[in-house]
Image (cartoon, rainbow, N blue to C red; front, side, top):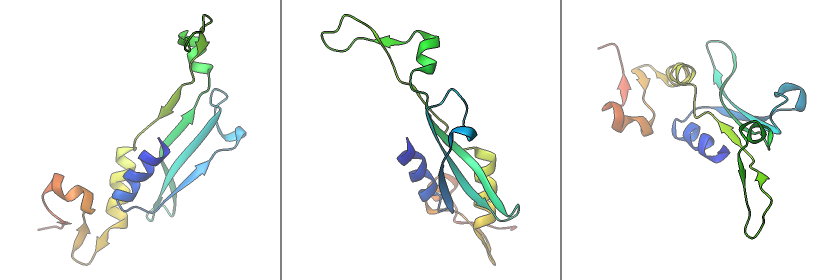
Length: 123
């Protein structure tokens, strides 16, 4: 999941960083959590655009989500993961901020097939 989100940010050509959250910064339900942040020039700070977490067995216990391994009669709790792809409003803002040129806003190469142009200008 980490590689997937990182791949999206690379394709969008955005400056990003990945933070491994310490225990005090994550919810008590998650065992490990990574935040992805993209730099916002307008706000002069990093903005969280995605989060990927491993909840171990916490959610599975509440859901009673279990499985049996090969040959085992005793069911075991699943481990659950949670991940958001990208926070769209922040990503759009960061694309606009980080791709300004004298000719207009340069569209990342990965998005050109979807929007049909490579520069967003006022014309």
